[in-house]
Length: 239
Image 1 (cartoon, rainbow, N blue to C red):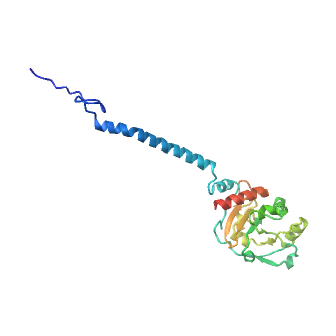
Image 2 (image 1 turned 45 degrees about the vertical axis):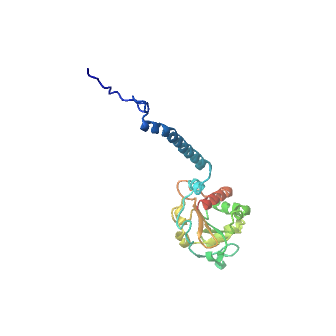
Image 3 (image 1 turned 120 degrees about the horizontal axis):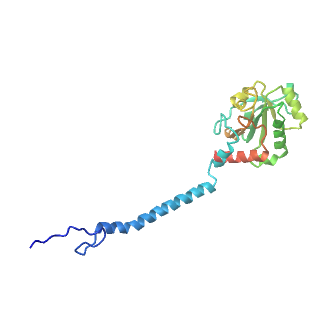
């Protein structure tokens, strides 16, 4: 009498015909909960990190948002600001104006303001509002606002006097300094005038922040002091 052996195998992880369990399947079953838990933890950590990144200001994040409003020309942050010498017509007849050098301000934090000048009343209003709200800049550690524009020196001096503006008004008649700073590349008048550029120069002579507001597409010729302070603060933190 012949005997037929059963070829049916036991299901994974179940006892075989001899009552023994499958060790491979059992091991897989024992690891499965841990693997699943690890995946859940990794996903949770990733979600929490994404929330943290979104809710917490990151270095440069505010700066990037601010730069939707302005360009950044060259020389930019970190560069040594090129030294220059220009006549300062504030309170002086153009022909007798003393000269001012950027290096004269070494050891101080200076905000250079290149602007379109004559014919741009918002540019002069910018100086007026910064002058009338001195804590806006002093609160950011700025020691001196220095304005720079082209045009006839006598007319710039007269405009400063008419608007009762006392900040240093340096006259860059041939745009030599403006071109070195590329401040004439961001305006609505082509490259024959400056646009609306702010450059913060630190005590060591290096540029800490720069914003060229006057370029396309917005051609901004006035920035509210509070907005300027916010952009400067954000850009300086990001840098």
